[in-house]
View (cartoon, rainbow over the protein chains, first blue to last red):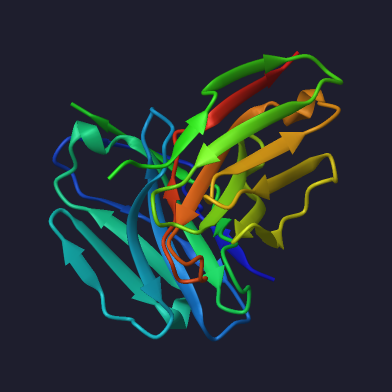
Length: 116
Length: 114
């Protein structure tokens, strides 16, 4: 069975602090995809990044970076020098290749509050 | 390029009624998925349509149904509404709908059942 856990329910940081959001997943598939989405107060989920199970290369994009480790089934997300506009709920999601088509399993989300 | 649009944005219904929600995907996207978001259960997959066929289905009762039209627009219907159906219903589209494709989400329809 596929499952995504985000142990941090809520995180509060002060602007300019770095913050890491944790994501742990479970899957029996050898081919799968991991995603991070951001949901600001407006409600619309915004796609941030996708990783496939064969690509453990970590990535940095501006203030965002991602750390994918198959050995620990983790796909963590770090915001460097956080800003108030980063305040949102962040979701990690898993999609197994065996599920032909789209069937994302989302984690419960982590609510990030960045205080000025 | 226009994003995913959903109508209506807000809806208030009473128990026992039925409701139809509409979703227009990004132009050129053939896969449309629906999700229910509630504070207690989080984001849960309802179903996915591709080329007018339901390809995947989540663990929801038969009261929840959907369809997709030849222009890829999709509708979902909930019959005999229950209080627990109050939720944000999100529609997402992707180009080919393969498991590795990112999905692009609409703003959602917030349904309140009284």
